[in-house]
Length: 315
Image (cartoon, rainbow, N blue to C red; front, side, top):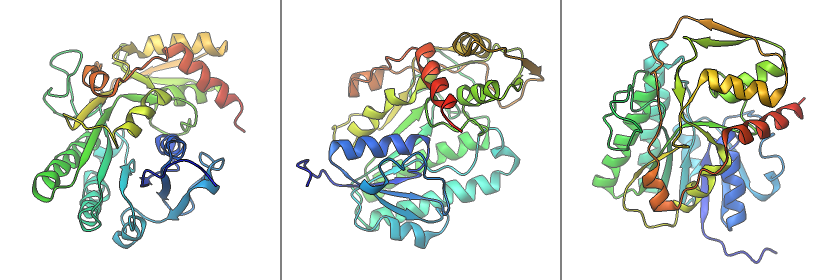
């Protein structure tokens, strides 16, 4: 029997995914009881090594009865579920609204009924701000998203604040930059590092929209996990926090790092730039550094190297 103190029961919505699996590990290590809610027939490979230590509930986030079943007896909720991607969300904004915003509103109603102590929501530091007026981007920067994905993230943020003001629901929002690291799906349409490395592994060309000058803030997954866990217990002064490296890297510079790490030939195809792509996104992380002692200490090359080694070991 474990001698660890039980700090409460946490539900991870989307717990089989990239972020969720790392949060599940950390919560278990910190003494929390963990329940994961994810879609039916989801691939559990990210959590297979800890699956016997947690509770797994399968269901559909858009099904209110499934969600109600999942949050029974829960103290804290980590909301990592998202049904769309920045690249394609604007093609069907109604689906984006219904499956993300409306389903989250139903979740918030249930959370109030169940007296949930706190919700941790992963928003998008890469999309909610839009084209930056100043750099690095502080949390108070105007929010003018250029995709339905960013709009839905921002709407959920606003509803969390509304439910806090009107119903007393506690929450913390993390606007996360471009995450990367082991377990990120290289076949996804999101996550440049994993996708690019996956293409290199398969000997396929990397497509870049524009001239490769677009700059993004890349943050290694394991650097942010302690902050997400500590948000449950630390008394906070603000409710929205940027999480990133605080540094910008162009796509061309990222390609150069990938060439160095993989030591393989890399073919790049440059295509016409997309309207949804803002030219630069670099987050100001001083608030999270002050509040959570946030320390994004993993250099890009080291993080890419770890991701590449993990990818080479996958079948």
